[in-house]
Image 1 (cartoon, rainbow, N blue to C red):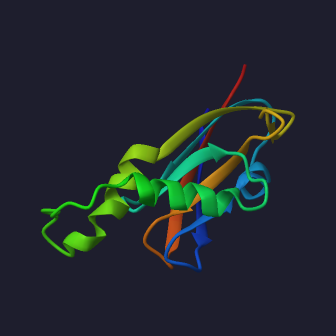
Image 2 (image 1 turned 60 degrees about the vertical axis):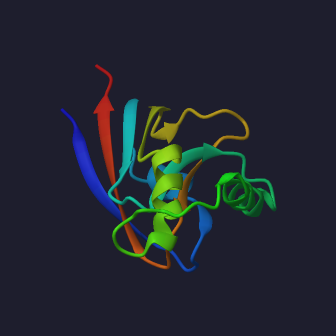
Image 3 (image 1 turned 90 degrees about the vertical axis):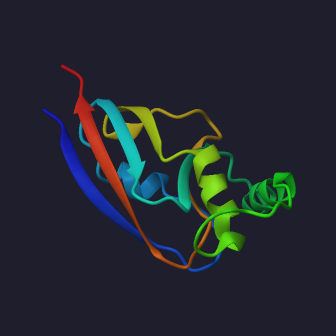
Length: 131
């Protein structure tokens, strides 16, 4: 049986990277696969190293990689890069968990990447337990 839960995260800046590993981990039970999905087109979820300063490095790098084009996005064309970055980074992750905790590598953290905040962001956490 799969259990689904909606989790809300309030962001505080236009762009930021927020470590949500512990927030999500507190919802896990047993062993299985967790699926995390963010219900937005200007935010993303990813696996990241969160050493001090890397959050700012990630954001600076994606801004630097984005060409300056005349975007055709029908409302607020200047905010199209927020959609582009969400598209590239992705809206979901599937992750193993054991003993009610994510089975991640030593430096891996689950992050919410805010690209057009501040806002309330909604994530769906689904758990598929192993038999």
